[in-house]
Image (cartoon, rainbow, N blue to C red; front, side, top):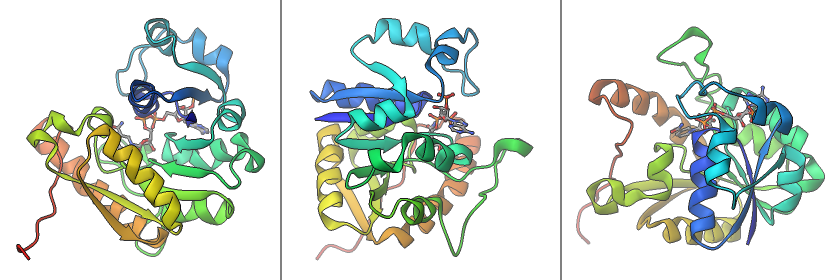
Length: 229
Ligand SMILES: NC(=O)c1ccc[n+]([C@@H]2O[C@H](COP(=O)([O-])OP(=O)(O)OC[C@H]3O[C@@H](n4cnc5c(N)ncnc54)[C@H](OP(=O)(O)O)[C@@H]3O)[C@@H](O)[C@H]2O)c1
């Protein structure tokens, strides 16, 4: 399948690599291709400049947000939460309408340093804001609760026996996203319900950030357990 991955950070790179390893064709989207390729410093998360990464991963094409979204039969939002709506506007409603839109973004505000507060919570979520602004896109919030490398390789911890969450209004879209998650190795996928359930998944990230600080690594996850039936 052709997939447009909006976002050039650790998440966009990891998802694009994970998808191409499964035989999909990925185009990564950015605000400005020339500016992206001209960067020589690592990004805020310490990832090497994009150009060097792309040289060793030439199977991933690069374009603007609009070009990546137009390329995709399915689109992934892996942009900074503060800029996600702006990035999706640049991608273009016409390039999102009718498509499954996997939303991995988190509403984190890093402007005041660590730990970042959420800029939307409790009675709304970034996932809902995206679904409201792009009502014809079939938004599925998922993978936002784990680190970028764990997203596509859950077996990095506990043999992959831990939980990933999913929220969205469109059942068929969630079924398709579930298949992609299983192709990455996820076995325990909890469908929380409609897109309003993204509130919980996004607010959990406040705890995830604290776990990361406390344990000294972001390679961690939770497993939801229930009584044997
Ligand atoms: N890092 C993780 O392990 C992790 C885990 C779970 C969820 N997430 C979430 O996944 C998303 C991506 O995270 P990340 O760490 O890969 O990178 P990031 O630095 O949060 O995001 C990088 C991307 O956001 C775009 N961007 C930044 N500001 C923008 C603006 N004002 N308007 C439009 N686009 C803008 C950048 O565009 P350019 O390409 O033009 O620079 C770039 O493509 C975030 O929402 C994050 O909270 C991250």
